[in-house]
Image (cartoon, rainbow, N blue to C red):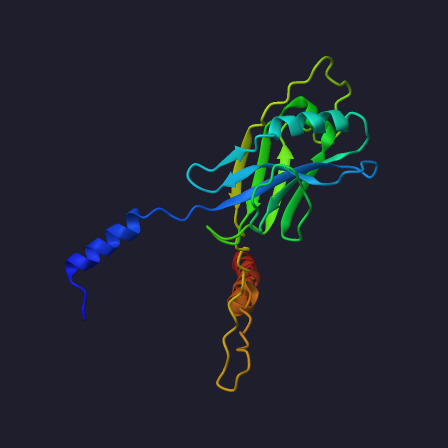
Length: 227
């Protein structure tokens, strides 16, 4: 049975106004160092991929950041790791073990003391697809990655960092610059172009005649004067 025009219009309006399904991922973080006994992750919040894209911080985020800052000041070359859980997670508030379906990115933990802005880049195969790579960096980190020389004095008040979230999609490589194939003959052989003649090859006969005329003309004038 064919659909009427009214039915088609209603279907179009329904599909246009129906919101897209909410997609959210859990974020986890930890301090990683060989001398630390506890290597578990802690819930940092939920990454909501809706308009606007935002992060709902976990209730314990400020406490965890304060603990991480104090821990990183006691060890050298510790790493702060951010993990994106691709498998469904209930959003626990305690420690969580790492899963194979996690995307992890790391920065030096010493940069947590400056309270910078976070940048999270999600690599997607296509718009709306599942992330396959995660990049995390802090905008105040110097190019050489060195840690701050001095640590802040007095009590440290941890605050929820501002996060900028961007999407990255695979880009098409530039097309190769292909040359036009040479023309072929009926037998399939390349057509051999006859090289163009030079100026001398084209007009050598006229040049010889002109030179001969120049050589003969003076002799004729001298003969007429002698007579």
